[in-house]
Structures are given as structure tokens and as C-alpha cells.
Length: 497
Image (cartoon, rainbow, N blue to C red; front, top):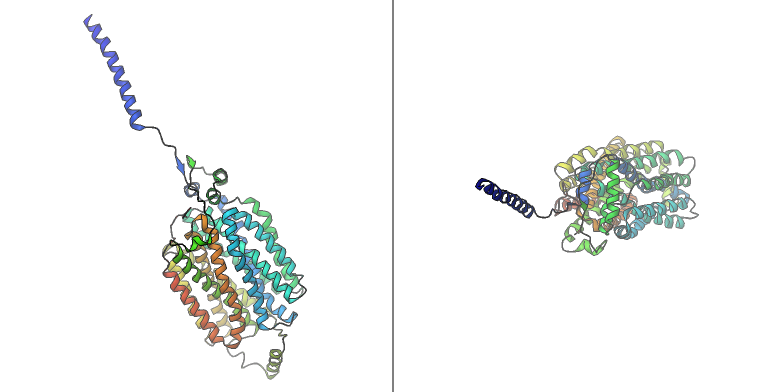
């Protein structure tokens, strides 16, 4: 009996001990916290895949259209000079007005993109540019031609949203490789317009060249439907559900999975304000970036337009001394007349193609540089070297030597643009990325607007003075690059300020 009573007393004791242990475990663990993730973490978790290849091809092709519209001026200038009996400054004014339109609309479109979406603004800008580009081919006078090309510049200003969409969808470790490779599309557009000009200009004329150059933009409008709005933008405006839907679709296309938990990202009320670029945190970065953008655009379009001028007027070593007296009298007569018809020859188009191919020559080294030593040092090296090669053009050169120098210059100025595009898209947070890139694009058009008057007007008066000016601007940009306060190599994209 005693043993039975002892066993009975032990059973409740053991049961109580088990309950106490379970209660202690629950109390110790507490309620489990729900897992969350950010857009950045989701992009990194999903990884690189088929969606990003499609994104690279479609958004990269915006560079083909932009290159064709900008490079068009270099191959059309000799024809419109003769067609409307234009002076040098009038030819330069056409290019300047295109960049003036770009400058006016770049900040405005960036502001709209930060508020209403990158994809919407990209689509509107393509429709706008294609429409007014087609109208340009029917321009009845020089004044109408200038006005319509200015409106084309307004539309082209929105094409940079394609780069922002690419940047915001790419995982961090792929940005330094995929974004520089986008230069292939700009090169393709440049080569395409030069090739078309060599065939169409002698037969169909400049009007048919402009019409043909408008077709790629129209085609691209139709394929934008395959690219979703930026998930980072959707989160920044509080539309987290749309961001999750986009990320799930990307994961499905990439044959990947989403991270566990729910999307949680801070939302900023202030978006797309120009004043954010010049607040205490970003004012030094913004000012130095603008100096670099201005210098790079000045040098880039200076090289393109100077190449056309050097070839159009045969300004190579010994060319002026070997000209016959008949040719000299024709040049003198032409200089006194507003009509100066110096058309580009097949050899000139070939030289332009060779020098344009130089734009991709440094891409492997550029990719290696920005992923090893960083964006700042790479930009310092390429901008400084660009200035040196501008000075080398002052040396007496044969045609082969001129082609070699122009080839190297195109490679360097292209690398400059590659690096500063990547840096600008990375250094600003999502809520001000579009307006930051838009403001930089506007500032750089000041350099682009100045380049025609230096490369097409001053160069005819003082070749040494024009080339030295290009070199000095490049050296200033190099110093500004190496002293930038933030290095973005390996840095995650910031969502809010």
C-alpha cells in the first residue's frame, strides 16, 4: 500500500515537471518574429538569369536609338550646309539646339520619372523623339529643321531611364560587368548610322536618311511591354504589392525562388526633388559629378565633330601644301560663299567607322578597372589620358596616324561615359536617382552645346587653340574624378537618403 501511494505521488510530480519545462521553453523562445526582406535582398537572392539577359537586350537597345539620333548630325551636317547654303556657325547651331532641348527636358523628365515611374517616361520619350524625328525629314527650311531637331533632343533626354531600370534590377556584383557592356549598343547605333549614311546620302539624300534612322525607335516602342516597372520605384511610392508581383515574376523567369518573409522597405515622402542633390550630404558629390559630366560630353562630342571636320576639310599633315592652285582657288571661292559643299567621301566614311569601332576597344580594360581599382581611379586615368591624346593631335600626322589617334580618343571618351553613367546611377538613392541622372544629363549638355563651336568654328581658325582647350577640360575632369568623396564599387544601391 505504501509503495502504491508513493507511485501515485510521483506521477503528478513528473507531469508537473514536464509542463514546467514546456512552459519555460515557450517563455524562453517567445513569439517568433516574422521574416522580412528588402528589394535589394530579393534582387540578390533571386540572382542573375534569363530576365536580366532580356532586360540587357531591350533596355540596352535604347542606346542604339540614342546613338543614331545624336550621331546623325555628324553625317548630315555636310549635306544641310550645302542644301541651305549655311555658314559654319549655322551648322554648329543645329547641334547646339539638339543639346539645348536635351538640357531643358532632362531634369524635368527625371523629376517625372521619380514621381510617376521610369517605364512610363521612357515610353513617352521614345514616342516623342520618333515622331519629331520623322517630322524633321519634311522640314521646309533651316529654321524648321533646327526647331524640330531641338524637340527631338527633348525626347532623347528621357532615354536614360533605360539605364536606371537596368541598374535597379541588376544584382550588385553584376553591375560592374553588365553596365559597361551596354556600350556595345551605342557602338552598334553609331556604326549603323554611318553605314546607312554612306549608302543613303549619295543616292536618297539626308531626308531619307533621317526617316530610316527613325525606324529602330518605333520598333523598340513595341517591345517595352516585356519589361516591368522598377520594383525599387514601386516600393518608394508605397506600392509594395506591385513590387512583390514583379519580383515573383522575375524569380519565375529566372527559374529561381523568392526569399522567405514579406517585403518591408521604408517609404520616403519626398521624391524627385532637385534640392536634394545640393543638400549637405550630396552637394560636394553633385558638384564634382557635374564638372565631370560637362567635361566628358565636351570631349566626346568634340571628338565626333572634330573627326568630321578634319576629314571633310582634309586637315592632315601635308594636305594643305599638296593642294593644287585650282583647288586653292575653289577653296577661296567657297570661303567667300555661304555654300561650302565638302561632301564626305567613301574613304571618309571608312575612317569614321574605324575610329567609331574604337569605342569598344577599351571595354575589357574598363570593366577590369572599375571592378578592381574602382570607379574613381578608372575615371581619373581615362580622362587624363584623353587630354594627352587631344594634345597629340597637334603633331604633324599622316592620314594613318590621324586615324590611330582618333581611334584611341573614341575608345577613351567612350570609357569615360561608361564609368560616369555607372557611378551616377549608383551613388544616388532610389528616391532621387532619376532626377540625379537627369540633372547630370542637363549639365553635360552645356559641354555638348559648346563642343560644336569649338570643333566646327574655332578649329577652322586655330586648331592648336581648340585642341588645347579640349585637353585642359579633360585634365580638370580627371582631378574632379579622383577627389570624389564616395566610391560605389561593391556598394549596395541606397533606397532612401
